[in-house]
Image (cartoon, rainbow, N blue to C red; front, side):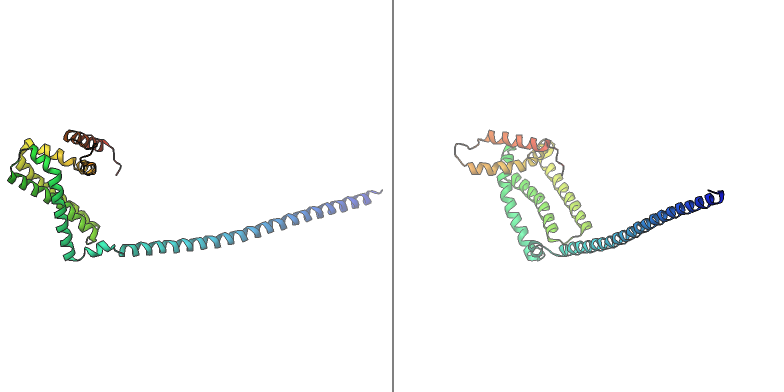
Length: 232
């Protein structure tokens, strides 16, 4: 084979090889374009889904806002009823009657332990009743919805000031010697009410509590409640 013919064949072989490489490169480019097109399609779909989700979230947020506003405007029947001044006064009178009976029952042992005269017992009962009505009337204001958040805080502050003033009057009446006894007795009222209900259920049957058992149980329950670490 002459040298010229050999060079021609080598050149043709090189051309074929280059064509193959070119074809393979074209194929790779086609594949990359297809992938790019696929990615663009996915990106469009993702954007569309994101927009749809965003719109859905907006709708949900608006629905939640509407429900919250509607709930805020919706008052309970009791709240609506307590907006009536006559009904509010009626409820206050009922509270006074109920609390008066509870004080007679729950504080009678304390009055006896201090050997108070009937007049002193009546005066002390009146102060305890006034103090109890402060919380009861503050509760009516909360339920009736007559106050906003700021006004509610003022109601609680005023209630505390009123009760502190009544406590000062009780302290003046009982003196430094007996006032701590009153504070201790008052703190145990939740337990005394519970034990009183239990005692009423037992009646005079075999499970009836004698005075000492009743007092021991009240003290045990009161100490347990005061020592418990409440989270709320």
